[in-house]
Structure formats: C-alpha cells, structure tokens
Length: 614
DNA sequence: ATAGGGTTAG
Image (tube, rainbow, N blue to C red; front, side, top):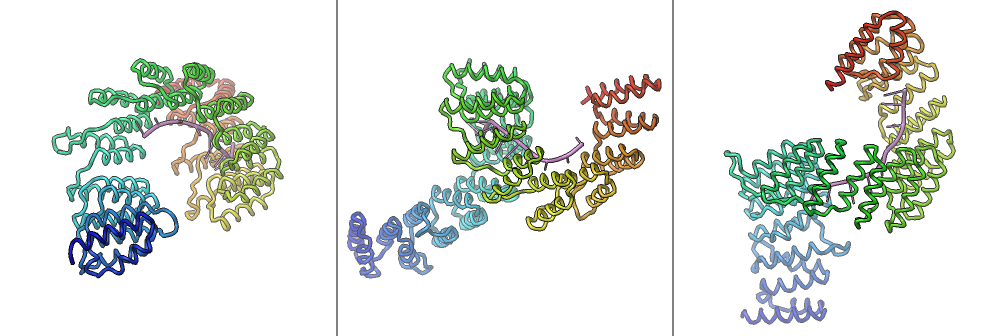
C-alpha cells in the first residue's frame, strides 16, 4: 500500500465529511482494502462519525484498532479524537456510558496510549459529579499502574470528588499514591486539601499542611508557593472557628508573601468579627479596605449588615445600607432577606413587608428564600392570614414551599387550634410531593397529645415509624411525656421515659425530658422521686440547668427542706449554672424568711465568680 | 475563597 493512497483517502473522507455526506464517507471507507485502512484513515473516519453522533459506527472501527494484535494501532491522535468527542456528547441518544469510556481508557492503555491531561481531567470530574468516584478511582489507579499518569490535574479532580463524597481515607490514599508515582502536587492539590480540612473545622491540620507545603520546616522538601485563594481559605477557616485574631495575622503574612489581600480576604475577616459581635472592629476593617482601595462588594455589604442586625443594631444596619446605596453599591436578594429576617425577629412585621416591596422596586426579583423568611416570620408572629397571602404570592412567582416552611405552617396553625387548616397544609404538602419528616410528625403528635387525643397521637406515631420508616426522636418522646404530665398521668409519662431508656430505643433522655418530669413530680409534691431523677441525671451525665433547679427549689421551699437546698445551691455554683430571676425570687424570699441571708449572699457571690470564670 | 430563611419538647 502506498502512503499516497492512504493520504488521498484521508482527504476524500474529510471532504465528504465537510459537506455532511457521512454515509458516503462510511461507504468509501468500507470499500478500502484493509491494508489501506491505516491509523490516519481510521482516525479520520472515527472523528467524522463521532462528530455526527454515529457513536456505534465509530466504536466498530475503533474496536478493530484496539485489538491486541491489530495491524493499525491507535496513536495519541486517536485517543484525542475519541476522548474529546465522547466527553462532548451529552444527549441521551448516542451517549456512551461512563463505564464504557473507562473501559476504553484501559484498552488504549494496553497500547501504551493515554488520554491527554485535559480530556482525562474532564472525564474524572464528570465521573465524580455523577457520583461515580469509584470508577474515576479505578481509571487513575489503572493509569498509574501503566505509568501513564504524570500530571496532578486529574488527581486534583478526583481529590475534589472524593472530598465531596466524604471519602476521606481514599483522599489520603490518593495523596500517598501520587507521592509514590512521583506526581508533583500543585498549589491546587494543596488548596483542595486545605479547603477540605477547613470545611471540617480541622483548621490546625490545615495550617500544618500549609506549613509543610511551603517547605519551611527542615524535614520536608515540598515547596509550593501559596496563592491568594489559599490564604483566603485559611483566613476564612480561622474566622469560622472564632480565631479571627490569628486570621488577621495571617493577612499580614499574606502581604509579606507578595499575595495582595482582596475583597474576599476582607469579607472573610469582617464576617469573623461580626460573628463574634465585634462590630466596631468589623467596621474598622471596612474603612481600612476603602483606604487600601480594595473595593467593597455586595458580599461585604451583606456581611456587615447581617452582623449589625444579628447584634441588635438594625437601625445602624439600615443607615449603613442607605449610605452604601448612595455610593452606588446596590443591594441584592440577600441584603433584603437579612432585613426582612431582622424585622421579623423583632416582631416588626410591617417593616418586614415594606422591605419586600422595596426590593421589587429596587429591581430585585424575590427568590424562594425571601418568601420563606417572610412566611415563617409572619406565621411565627401569629399572623396566619398574612402568611397565607404571602404563600399565594410565592406561588404566583412560580416557587414552591419547602419542607421546613410546611412544618412551620402546620405547627403555627396547630398552635392557634386551627386543625382544619393545619390538615390542609399537610395534604398540600403530600400532594406537592414534599415528604413529611419526623418534625412534621412530632408536631402533630405533640398537638394531638396536648389536646388529650392520645389515640390519634399514637396513630401518627405508628404511621411515622411503620409506614414512613422514621425513628421516634427525643422530641417525639418529649411531646408524649409532656402531654401525659399535663394530663396528670405521670405513671404513663414515666412508662414512656423508661421506654426511652431501653437499649433498643437508642434515644437517651436529655435535660428537657428530665425537666418535664421533675417539674411535674415537684408540682405533685413527689419531691423525693424528683430528687432521684436528679441523681439519675448525674449518673447518666445529663446536665441539669436553671429550669431543673428552679422546679426543685420551689418544691423544697414548700417542704422547707433547707439542707437539701443548700447542697443544690453549691452544686449550681460548682457547675457554673447561672440562676435567673425566678431562682433569685424563690431563694431570696425563702432564705430571708428563715434567716439564712449569709447563705444567700455566699451563693450570689459564688455565682458571680463562676460566671466570670466562664 | 466570601453573604441570606429554618420547623418539633421544659
């Protein structure tokens, strides 16, 4: 066979392809003598077939090339054509399954041909996104065995995927394999690891990786220069665990490392100081930012505004927003949600509604979260009709309620004794395909048991556990225990409490459960029983709180059991459990009446000491 | 890499 024959075949196929005559091209290809179908010719026809979506035909041609004894073996160009085209095909038709692509990688590998880095990275990312990290792992593992992997990028893609799939052990294993195969990690590789550690609040581990990466410690040789994103990640990680001072120091290091802080750097720090309530510091950072000519953006605005609102400075926040608006920085959905939520929390529903109006006038389309915020706020403020009308608005805007919203609505309608309407929300929820969860059931169980309809409460409990396969939670038991107590049926309440203590239930009682029972027993003057439950708490490591002590103090006062009260006062101080005005009222009245002012004073001082120690 | 809502017991 002459080279020119092959060359002219390539030209012919290309020309036919260009004018869309795929069938003719395929026919021309099949008339060729098998010796004439060399690698170049085959590459040409495969490319043409794949580009026009004829995957099966292309695979037929390819399969012959991939046979172990094939006369015309695939080359790098073949791999490029095959993988790049297959990755582009997205429609359902002609789509090659991911495991088939993986199989091709392995078959090419037997000919010592490997996909190029970009195609391989895309393939790995795609597999990881569709939840197929195992396949991605096998591909890279196989390539490493064939010595066909040199670059870190595909490994980085897999590391990201493994992180999202929470396969931590495999992340470590991959890092080790990279090291064994001498694949040099890049700043991206370390960035993924550091980001991952920060997300799981393992900030000290992240800092250790960071130091190792910089290679400043003698024993390690790795040297990779950190970049801005990596510094920002660490600064954010430190801020998220309340270590904003260290984060601020790190910004200093960043500067001396020739990484200029960006808007995001400041946003992270401002967020950190806002979370710790140091709004002034946050504001100072904002000013510093303007001085350094680092432009604040809408995230800066939202972070500060949210911080101010969450620390009871709503009017300062509004003023700040107005100033920023005048400077030309527009708010967005998040800004308005922050304000709507803030006004809901202080029960200023009219202002909350005003902000919904304003946001539309400002050209922001309210999204689902904005509506959820307002609906829940209104419902919780007891304005059920207003909440319902905002639900209509939400639906007109094309959004749906989510599970939490339904739960809030059901709960609030139950609280107002509007069972019919609550039932309607429940029906709508199920029709909309939003599955009720244990919160939904607990709400219903709580409502029915509180109105004394234990039969229905237990029916819902049965539905929840047997039909929905949901496990009862501490709230489920709490609702029943509380209701039985209210119904003066302590025996039944205790029975349920004991049920919780069964090994099988796996729901250990918490402080609230004990408090319900202790309060109830105290009110029934079964003080000794209540005290035995207090011992039980100690035994099981459940911390009593102010409510627990208040219930017991009241009962002890009625019995005038002074010694017992003194012991418990000491215990409160010991465990730094702060008395509230109820505690003080009971004790002041009682102890002064019996002339034990000294004990009272000692208690108050003890509390102050333990308070400042905390 | 950075910003928003969040339900069920005392």
